[in-house]
Amino acid sequence: MSADPMLQLKNVSKSFPGVKALKNVDFSVYPNEIVGLSGENGAGKSTLIKILGGVYQPDEGTIEFCGEQTKIPNTNAAINMGISVIYQELSLVPELSVAENLFLGAVPQHAGKIDYKTLFRKSQAILDILGLELDLKGKVGELSISTQQLVEIGKALARDAKLLIMDEPTSSLGREDVEKLFDTMRNLKAKGYGIIFITHRMEELFQVTDRITVMRDGEIAETRATSEWNMDDLVFSMVNRKIEQFYPKRTVEIGAEVLAAEGLGNKLIHDIHLKLHSGEIVGVAGLVGSGRSDLLKTICGAYPVRYGRLLVDGKPCKIRSPREALKKGIAFVPENRKEEGLVLESTVKENIVLSVLDRLAHGGVVRNAKIDRCADCAIDDFKIKTPSCCQKVVKLSGGNQQKIILSRVAETEPEILLLDEPTRGIDIGTKVEIYNKIMDFAEKGTAILLVSSDMAEILELTDRVYVMKEGRIVAELETRNTDSKEIMDYSTGGK
Ligand SMILES: Nc1ncnc2c1ncn2[C@@H]1O[C@H](COP(=O)(O)OP(=O)(O)OP(=O)(O)O)[C@@H](O)[C@H]1O
Ligand SMILES: [Mg+2]
Image (cartoon, rainbow, N blue to C red; front, side):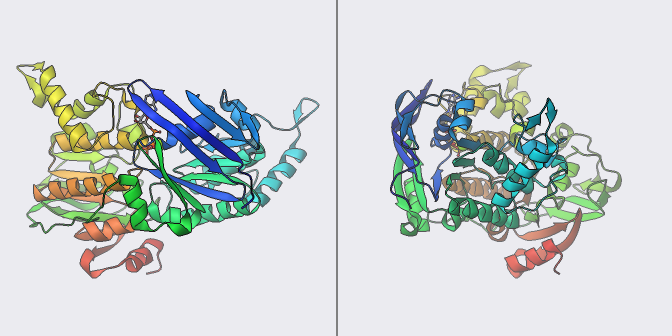
């Protein structure tokens, strides 16, 4: 590590109405270094990097970049300085080629026309830095999410970034793609770049970072070299308490069959046979893109059934929309909660009670006091970090937005619960609470279908597992008689 930091923040504070998001933050990044930034949902991680990206202005404190004290008044200023933030929502144009995307807005021109020769030469140089082999003329929309993410990093390099900041880049990637991203990160680090990496997957911090900074309630709790952390210390530093039992699996009596698919299919999933019983937790494993989400969406009526049939409580049942599914006791928590689940411009309480307004109404009139009580309970229950139940959801941190949709579903007391990656983007302390909620549901007799890319979740929480590959169920396994290797073998087709 070189002697002088590339980036140094001193005493940085930032408040929003009702929230002190950052308090006297000191933080640094050196060249040739990957710094992990961790902390519970709402700890202030994204706020910190939005300050570096020029999205927010600090109320107090100083920023030094490459030895000079500086201000970052807007996003362009950040990019021009060499600070590039790669957000989870990628900013690529799917219809344009890889090369055009790399230099979007800065395509080399000659005599008023695109200078393709220079564009391709420069683009190839970027791919070389990334260690990536790609067709520069291919459309970005046709690449996998993980490759698109690498192109997004390439875009930052094309703008001469020195400091790359990645906010939860791995949350929608599978194992292998994460490895690919890490290789690229290590490669960039060796070339002198500085990287800030945010993730809620603890093991990733140990795999790829050189130092780990923990934030808690807007403050820097602690920074240490990665070699000086262990998992227990790190978790303790984040949540400020000891977590005794990470996977609270309980013994629940498994009851009658509540859901069955008989040869169910459409364009995306094929010839699906499955069964789900009251009180049972059934995992759906498989690689990203194997059809797991499509399966849940077909069951809850978001996608049409083309053939085969669905039985609820033994009776054939046609479900045309998630709303209709909910009426039949089937609740669905989508993976893409921001787009599919929340009304971002509405308040926390409106979002929580959205599905149960009838229950809270009396003689056709919705009682405000009842709504407030219901929302306050949910906020307590799920430890949703918000200044009040009247805050707009768009202003909450990513993880807290996720908790809202889970709490809304909990309010509906479903008979069948379809969960798609319920702990994505959720901090480690809250994960345990969500596992407990899942167990509570099972104990009350809810049947649960759980899609998860987290192998430990599948192995520790479920009773049975279906493995999917290319839109089909390729294996049904008893959880206690299987292991991650067998599940991976089926997922990849090795078995
Ligand atoms: N624009 C905003 N207006 C009001 N409050 C905000 C705004 N942005 C963030 N906050 C609040 O600041 C705090 C820190 O949020 P931040 O998004 O930085 O958390 P985070 O560490 O990134 O969490 P997560 O892991 O859930 O993404 C939270 O309490 C959040 O509600
Ligand atoms: Mg965040």
